[in-house]
Image (cartoon, rainbow, N blue to C red):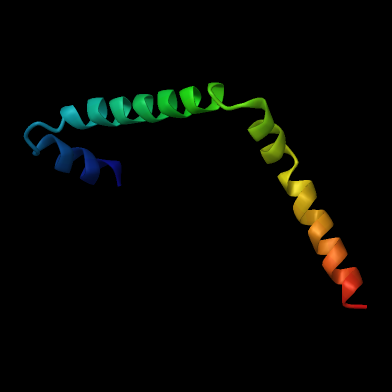
Length: 67
């Protein structure tokens, strides 16, 4: 299987730029997410931190109401 892919890639002109582009895209995305996380306010982090528990409480309360 790898032979077919390797042969196809060697026949494409300029294929060596694709790994560089993908690494650059990954690096920019990772850096952007890291900056966004570090700039978040403590209140927003606490809200997101407690989100799974709030959904569980809402499900428990709604199931008790239907009884």
